[in-house]
Image (cartoon, rainbow, N blue to C red; front, side, top):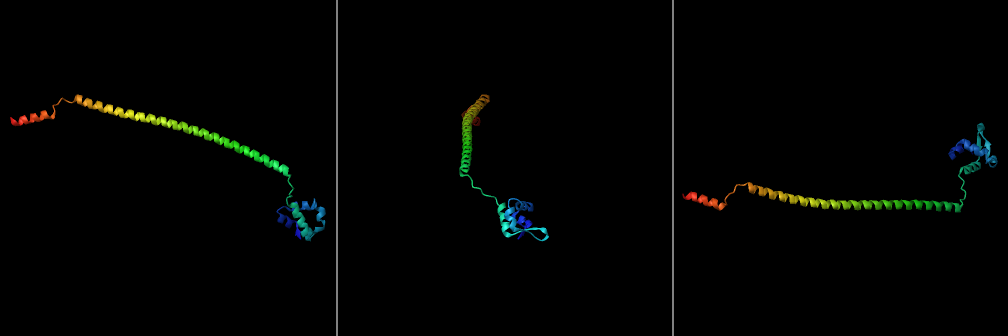
Length: 160
């Protein structure tokens, strides 16, 4: 035997919810299982408690398989459509990124060729500057005689 409060606690519902079942749909079925206990509390026999417990369990109604299948099919179709759209978006993004990469590689190659040409021009300019500096030094240097003439001069001084 259980009190309404004890049964409510066991079911995880309020005592009011249990009273509602007792005085509602199950009133006739529970009549023989309900008594008044000490202090005027309602006491429920084990069989009656089981009936109340069953009334709180969610009822499982058979699902219309055709409607369920139609819903599943529609859901799958919708999901597949969204997935296909996303895949197509990703493909477009990949293609766009590949085109950007190709443009950047082309720019890099162009800049490398320009850099090589500039390095070559720089080397040529340095050669020209070196040549011009050497020529300038030769022009500015006093005309001197070769080493042989100096040697000859030094040997004549020693004789005389």
